[in-house]
Length: 253
Image (cartoon, rainbow, N blue to C red; front, top):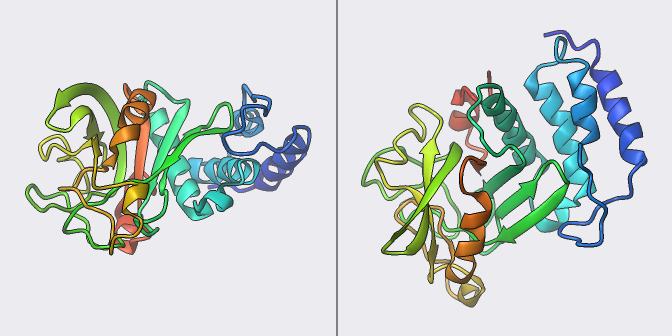
């Protein structure tokens, strides 16, 4: 890959970013940015920059503008998420490319580690708790699987599908987009649903409640989460597992 224009991209992004006031996460008063500066710059250099380079610049601008460090999200998680998002977008796999949702399973389950980000208007739409699988770990997620009946979470990139009403109420189907990593999500009935075992009322418990592998969210917030991300947006479940980071084709395309 030629990196000839990367310094130009980064410096241009920095200049463009300086033209806009800093945005605070979730601020209703902050002006909307209908087009991220990095998207304009990147379009001019698509022949010389790969998605990793574009994602690094875009993620850095998002991270700084939205002060995501204050919400606990790591820049690494956002950069990986943006890389896979761009690769899925290139494949035509995304219907709603305005949103990027990240479950950061490097964090404790006591943290609000689900982030729903409007990447086009530079806004955090939702930041809340999310459960991992029963056999994935207690307070921290450590073990992951694509195997039915494992009761473990799967890592990687998913695209949201439609909703249905099941035993957990309103639920959202997920399509795993990584062969061998999460492609059995529908077979395993891995969905986004609400649960009473996750949320602020559990903060004094030894650990948050866990699911059978689903990224379950607080019951009171589930309808909002599901209706926001349904129908073709990207959901990325992140953990700094070397086997995943090195084995994901969407991260290493």
